[in-house]
Image (cartoon, rainbow, N blue to C red; front, side, top):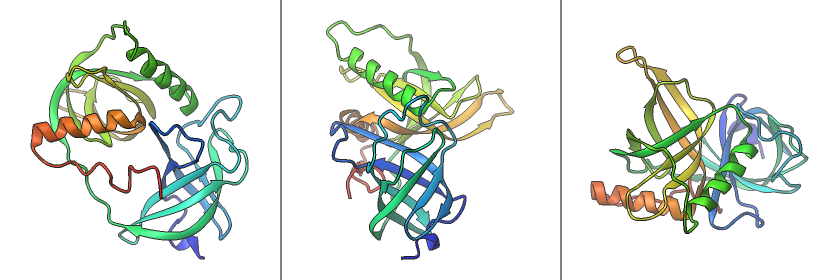
Length: 243
């Protein structure tokens, strides 16, 4: 099949972990950019390091669902890791046929909630280790007291938008207290866009949640539904980690 018709050089592709060995309670993903596309392999690079040192959780034959937009359509394809990745590139072998789906915007809401935003230059694996540690700590009988500030934000099940005084990095940790009597939501977030506001000299930035517990996805969905009264289509193709 001529995959290059749908995966052109420079095109952004969202990779969702669908391996049998994945944690069934967590959603894991990241974004790559097409370097080359052949019938039997797809080479992607990332805008941040996947790991430092060893390859971490990236294992041989690890499977991903690839989603992208091409020719005005949502495209998805299953692919598996062809060889060990480098810190900033990954080579995949397409498995099966392309399929088309309808892209839908998840409901969003403007709100003000206690939030902690930790932005630094680290690899995806380093962020994932910290995310797992914090997620575990927040669910202990005596969880740590995090210094969260009341923040105006725009929230959806897939990501968040807010203003920050410091220039954001490609990856960050975000902790949000939904004030629903449960532990705060904790996620690794990927920077999608940023712009500096001339009015207040703040950075306006949009992030996508790339590592988050499915339980927390559902809680965000319910929170938005309570505020807006609109049914949140959580099980949209962009978020489901299955084919």
